[in-house]
Image (cartoon, rainbow, N blue to C red; front, side):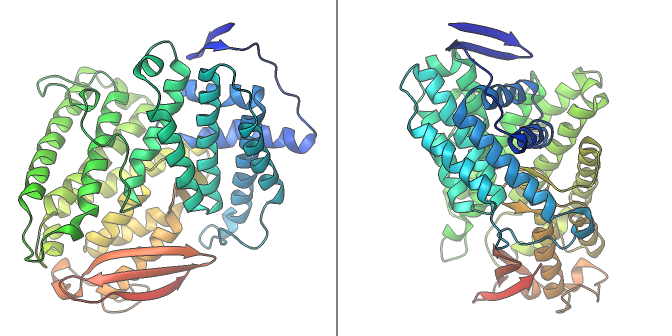
Length: 461
């Protein structure tokens, strides 16, 4: 038995380990890229040194994790090469006809090793399987294999849910750490899949907010609690089509909206009290300051969505009431984007499996009809090519740009900018938008507020 506690990494009941040799220069370069580039951005919204140490430890000592890490590193490097700074605003297609064969070989080798692993200590086996699920989810998101990515995520979620509480919250800190990352991605998937139901979305004793007169104990606790509330709001928003044919909001929906609004208000109070009691330490530190701005941004946008949520064709007009909040969101998003630029050290493209600012900017761009705010959103989305799970900033900007063109009179580039929100009548407003990305094209479908019929077109990116 071997035990180590170093930089927050706690391992127990793990067999004696050996650093795996590097087979050639190419693998060495891939592992260096994984350590210094890939890992740095995988959890950039909520950086965690112990999680990075865990990823590096297992990628250096467990063959299946090593091959999964190399596969991710190679496809990430390919992504950077395709989206170099000189071509940042015109990204190449996700599958450009030249698949990375070497990356796929490592991907398949990781699967083979995982299937053939010995059934030794169940803790180690479970941890390795969860880690590979996590890395495969990242790999397939980045490669554009979104269906496969969600299969890996769902498999990881199911495995993590089968772990009993003694394992998860007792001495098995390692599994707890890996399961937390998997469950976070599961919770965030509801922001881009309308029929996705996260495994931990239901209220449990562990997910309940602290008493309203208190404060969060840490920024991590505040982020975890907001993540649950965001998922519940998005789940309610995504099931809007289930409202009754009369156009009236069913009583259960009204009740859920009321409860969620109350929970968001409690969260905000606990969050601001925590910041006040910290005497400015969270804001002073660049890393935690970034997360503070991101949490305020995500809180505000789901608050707007929930406030505007209701029946009838006039609901798209409700968003106009929240212009000050939208403007606040753009300011916060700009702060977060600038902080991440400093964190990255350049405007090179980045990828993370976690959801951050891209979906928020997209929502602002399609729901806030103020012409200046919309163009500020486009500017932030285009400034740096950012991939957050399925969300891609350049594709999101292209869709927002098209919605602006439709609502402001048909100009695809939004050249004939309207002077005010009031100029866009309710029947001109796009209510729902969805899109599928294939090669260098976006196939979008959209509906107008209060009108029947779905419109479809293709956009080049």
